[in-house]
Image 1 (cartoon, rainbow, N blue to C red):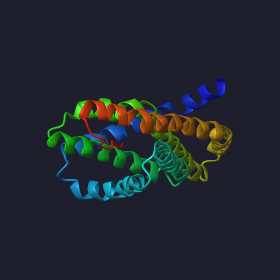
Image 2: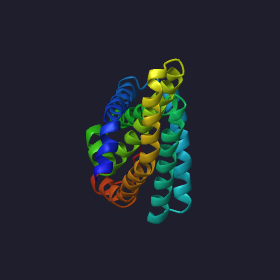
Image 3: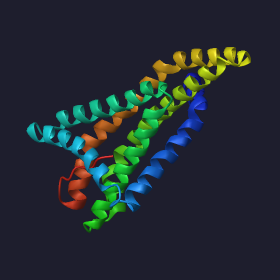
Length: 212
């Protein structure tokens, strides 16, 4: 528990930044849906591949595995590729936010209550998944900032020891960080594949697929 607390304390401001990035993206996607329509459609095309795969073998176990695998892959990539100056996790958070906002706006335009869609179709698994994704991205941003600091330390000898210590901390905490993200995504995938479809069916009378 102490190690988890240290991990959180070292990442909390990056997490706050990640929340703002995703929220900003969601607002853009919702209020500027027409402007970003082409970009959103390109992202939706990738999600359609997952939907098509599910149609071929539409079982709860298959849905769980596809959701879990997709989320873990994208989250781990945001963590690891964050080393390249945080570009990937920042763009990932913004694009995910844009897609979320766009989907809600499209449903709203189609006469569906977007708030109800969010509460029923996204929030149940989102309370696990969104924090996990944002936390993974915030770790990637933290690693990217540290990479930038490492370059700066080449010209500032007084910073070298501090940067070295921070790298040691990051490497020591990485297994716990990875486990935390994967564990949250595991729970989220169970909820999304088992509970979310039932809630959607009972609320909207259809098995529409809700995607982050």
